[in-house]
Image (cartoon, rainbow, N blue to C red; front, side, top):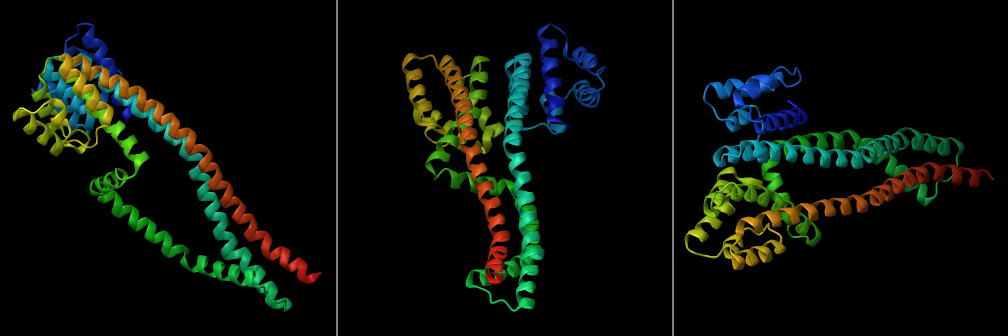
Length: 335
């Protein structure tokens, strides 16, 4: 099922619950929409059998923050608000994905076409020039010798390289959890990437933490929930946070176990412990992180666009050079 369908179901269900409609009746009303029927019928069947809405969504393949928000909403009693937050999260994620696709689809197409052109040059055009030079008895310069060698190497290695890429891609997909962890560890060692990842992980954590605290859940229980839900695959870190809090450590000291948090979070948590209003502080932290995340994504997009254009321009220039080099030397020899 599509993410857009889930987004629509959760958003409409939230509106109905806020209007005072019972959950079963709301699901029955939504099932009249043909686009939602398959999803809603599955959810309604689970609810009628006594299964929680969060569990029904998980059985339908909805996991991550969406399922976490619904589960937290059922615990806090703010299901309508949780549904709205989950729908908003899906909408924001869809917009980010559309932005990434818009930024990457055109360059990806150009990369594929450029690679195809380069292969055709190496496999067909350049060997034709090599045969022409041999037939006409024209001596090849050093640059042309390297060019003809490059052509033979590309022609011979194209299929093995393509096969290796497909096999490696399949292996990376099957081991994506382990690869994601290794990639995250590697990115955390690079300054700019580390700051961006810390911003993303902090945003994900405090989005749900602020919701739990606003719903009346105490901090220790909220941390336990974050550990149970394994938000951002950091459940083992939240286990250390909970153990530290149980030993009487301050909130700032406990959250120091999560190195993926951006430094500004600790400063705001320290201020929150001073004022004693942790609930308001977590909401303010989330709002700040939301604005910072949007600004950083826009900044990355502005940097990526000219870099992609430069790389593609270089590839096109290289293809043109490979085509013109034997032609210019042939004209020079004939002259």
